[in-house]
Image 1 (tube, rainbow, N blue to C red):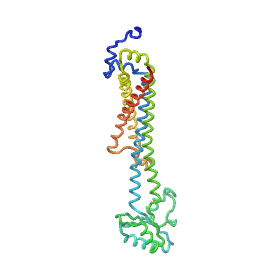
Image 2 (tube, rainbow, N blue to C red; image 1 turned 60 degrees about the vertical axis):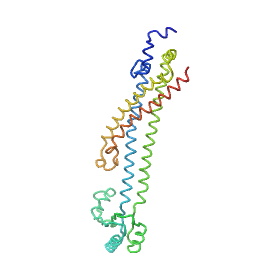
Image 3 (tube, rainbow, N blue to C red; image 1 turned 180 degrees about the vertical axis):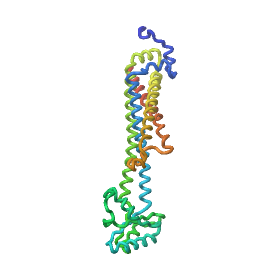
Image 4 (tube, rainbow, N blue to C red; image 1 turned 90 degrees about the horizontal axis):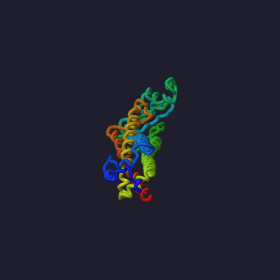
Length: 307
């Protein structure tokens, strides 16, 4: 048994267990497979967490914007024979002007209607030659606006007018955006669970690799909680450092994404805005907490099972 203590400063090792960076930390390998695994997994998961967080925030803003924009106005489409088109449009404008809770109706000019049809027909299509209905935009100015009552009035006074309150379009869009937000939140939870699993495996590997040193420490009176503290401290630090690096790379990637205007609205403003840029800074803190609890649980469980 004396050979097991040869070259080992037991007092320094015992004192180092309760001091950060002391000899006690040396029972955890500073380099090697477990260190690289912990750093890489924490960094990779933090990088993915930044994009999942950006997705959750962006889709939340998207749902609110779509709901607000589509609920703030209605559209009236007037279709009639060419000789009745002007009269039907005038009658529709009169009905809309006297609708409670509605703002000032606006008849879209032909060039604006042509711009709306360009994505489908192309810029060279002679839209003027097509039987395009007149479009009237009606803002909603008050809570007393009654879409169903307006629809009935239009049927009676302007049979060629059709009211579109965007309900058919709004509900699926808002539902899809809300589901994407839930998907982003679920992704964050899965990333945290995967990080905890990887750190737990790395901690168990480090404990198994240092079984002989752990047996010596027990012989000199070290408790399991004291031995586990050295592993918890080292792996928590690794998780925080790896997550900090991954978070910085993730934020840099988000910053390089084109804005909503530059992307033509396709990316719908994916990214952070204003104070939202501070939220990713919480990821290393969460990663450190995950590393702390995962390593503590793994260390105490494995030390209790191995006597």
